[in-house]
Amino acid sequence: MSDTVLPTFHNLPLAKQKRIIDAALAEFADKGYQQASLNTLVAHSSISKGSLYQYFRDKRGIFLYIFQFAIGLVRKTLLRVKDDTREENFFIRLERSLLAGVDFIRRHPRIYGLYLKILFDEHVPQRVELLQAVRQFAADYLRSLVRQGLARGELREDLPEPAAIFLLDALLDRFLQAVCVPAFDVTLALHQSPPGNLQQCVQELMALLRTGLGKA
Image (cartoon, rainbow, N blue to C red):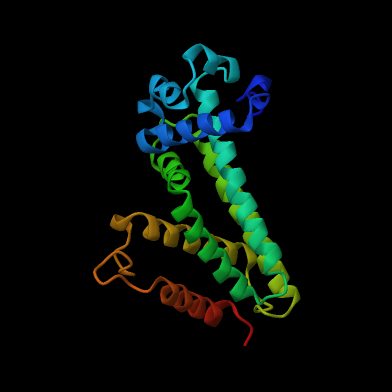
């Protein structure tokens, strides 16, 4: 995806780059790829449509660049959590990672909205490749936590690593969906009145994982 953006874009002032990125993110996250309008995008960016094509080859290029930008922010966030918790127990690190994900989607709801559009819209360009990139990053991140937990004796010695990583990835992904989309939250009551205690829900999930994955 190296051809998604032209060099001229990176020569722009950072404030102008941010305006274009914010407008593109809003358009794609709110409307999806097919319904997104480049006319609306340029209007919200305060640039001309001709200028846009000096920075990106086409609509697909803009979309793929926004995806790269979004996953870059997610990567920075989780790597910071991993570094900050490197001396902590595996289950504390996992809990902090999950809570960091919740905080991220609350601060960047359109980035998570973009992910959901890719997840459920079959017409997104290079959809399979994009979803594989998301899942691969998640798997690599969780694998590093699991292997460090095993090395420290915090996890069962007979832990089946691929199955454990799949389970953890599914848990984190599904929990964030429940937090973000009320229709997906049919068990934890996070969106009901009164709402469920998110911190308590996370701790309950960690306790269940500790029972199954932790060293006796």
